[in-house]
Amino acid sequence: MSMFFKKVAKGLLQNIKTVIQAIIFSVIIWLFISIQIFPDVSLHISGIKVSCAPTAFMNTENLKIVSVDTGEITVQVRGKRYSISSLTADDFEAYCDLSSVYESGEHVVDVVVKSKDETKECDIVSGVHSAKIKVVKIISREIEVIPNISDIELVEDMQIEGDVSAFPSSVVITGEEKLVNSIGRVEAMAEYDGILDQTADVPAGLVYYSNSGSKIIKPNVTASEDNFSVNVPVYKVKTLPVRVMFTDYPSNFNIEKLRYNMSISEITIASPDNSIDNREAIDIGEISLSSLTLKDLQGGVALPVKLPEGYKNISGNKTVTVSFPESESYGQLGFTLALDNISIINAPGNYNVRALTNEMVVNVVGLSSYIQAMTSSDISATVNLLGTELTEGTKSVSVTFRLKGGNVSAWVTGEEYKVEIYVTPKEITE
Image (tube, rainbow, N blue to C red):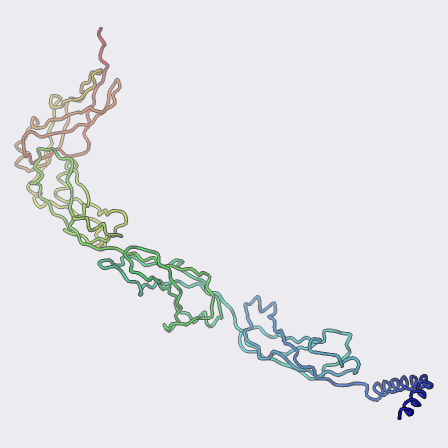
């Protein structure tokens, strides 16, 4: 047997040239037959990725592609075997032709397939491909943010007074046109774990509601702001009596006999803390007796209600009118005071001071029976120069008045009274 293989091997070695020539001729014949008899072949290429990018027009109009039903396609190509036999999906590109898309909605568009390498000679013969896409229009809309404090709990005796406000007070939401337009309101829901005892800015989260009032759970929109807060004005409310103070009356005036009423006896106010607990009444203002005229007695005096900073006027009364029920018993008379009735006190020791005003008329308001019995001598006028800076020459200075007697029932009223004085330096003697 071994002798047989030896003879075969010896024969091949002796005819190696003939064998090689036979192989070469066989390949040439095979290529010739493949090209001439079977010149073209067909091949299916699968897994070609389909891209879908918006056009410039779509970007300008804020048209967004939200879905494409075709992710891959298979194509049939035809060409020379030697040219197409090595083709794969990576040698092709496929994209949606969106040139006909001008509005939102569902569209059926052509899928264009091209070979990436033009040197690969092949024809795509699988026909027209298409894809169904969904396009939406993206819009932005500014909406007022409404504060919601339904979950806030307050300390006992405290309550919310005034306007509850959200910050920022508005928000711009961006999303699909249909969804954005379906939003009826946006609330900032205050979120606080404890119990509020004072005014505070409470963190809040946005809650969306539809036009019909239904809560929208996690809407597919974006907001221009992320951090929101709600200002919760917490106050303690209390009703207190009101009172008025009379000032600038002499010590011998019987203030108890001046009867008066107020248009309101009490007022409801709110304080931003517990300081209101230390108040027994609210002083609405002062009335200077020296400025109270007969007209004021008959018509009343209106005082603005002024509260401490941070307090709120719950009652809403802007003014309190002080009236005098016994005004018909009062009158007003003018009295002429001579120079002898004017006293100058506390003059500096280095100056001589004398009054230049010989007489002056002053108005006295009081019980008619009282002032009708008065004379000019019952009125004393005083010029007090204590603390007054004097220089040589004339000077206009203020005058104060006092009625003689005890528990008097009248007072001098009117604008500030002044007299002219003449100041000269004293001669220094050695």
